[in-house]
Length: 115
Length: 114
Image (cartoon, rainbow over all chains, first blue to last red):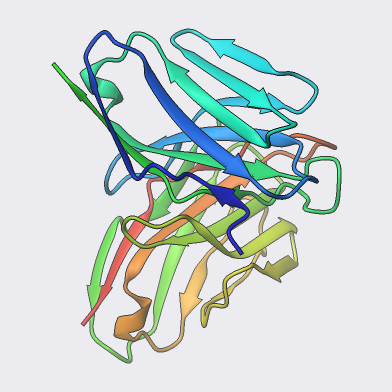
């Protein structure tokens, strides 16, 4: 049972344009969401997070939007840079419940930013 | 941000060998995790720990074992490696606070069992 889904395996964007990565979840107990970036043969790097009490969180070029009614979140990268090319993972947890910080990850989306 | 280290980064080993993957963090985090990831797939939690002498199995069944004798150290051991154990193993840690918590990852160990 895939509780966190990233339905787009890959995304290709031109440098300078906006990249939008999407993530859907099914578990209504999830209340904290994170995005990680991963290069091959390296560990994931934390990018940005959002609590369910918010619908938007911004950090530099990265903005995460949360639509609780649709159980959907998205990561916007503006402007996209070639160095952003990596695999992006969405993750979720029941921070206020019994999961004690355990994360559930999506399958990842490969972002390629062309110069 | 947590400083978290994993050794070795790459390991190629024959079937039947015993291996230990090392993970250490210097931030004093109470919680530590081991994930397994195959190419193109999500990260699967295989072990976690909430503190010294605490270890639990994760969502994905694994033949590996872990120990947590010191706060900073969370090694993973495979008693008899098999080709099916070939994967990337990622260690993570997070602080102890009620509510939202961010996990920080080490660089990973790429294990190949021949």
